[in-house]
Image 1 (cartoon, rainbow, N blue to C red):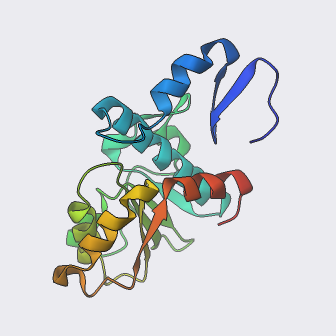
Image 2: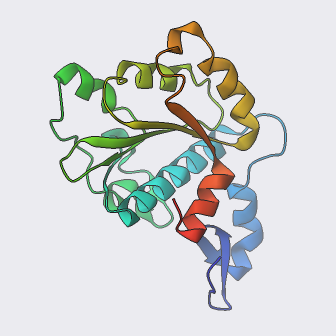
Image 3: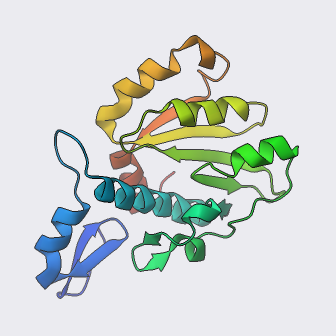
Length: 189
């Protein structure tokens, strides 16, 4: 992580705290090794990874979107709605597509306001809902990614092999949250 002043401690990429609060926040923002993730930790980590995706998209000169229901969620000391470029989708297609796209966790738009990349963050829930969204949006020339903790790759592999998703099987990619953090730190996408 970047060099920080002596009184600041880096918790995760893009997330810092005062050194005297390190033990409190390291516990709050870490994931358990095994077992269920408490709902409040799951939500906080979900928004954190949405924020990383937004910042990476902006660094790559994409316009970034998060759903309106997430705009007041926190990423570091900011609201996601203040970090991203838009919380309303441009009119890029049929209203039925736009209605479905409204619920995607993060979308990167190209300079023509067409969706270039779509991301769904899946910390612990079943991935069927996210894959169904992607399946319904498959007619767009868009990269589709599920972002989740690396141990969930087996769950992703199991779900994407379902016959329902045969048309998107080769298009939807899995990205571990650790890989996302590494991309954020290095600035390489």
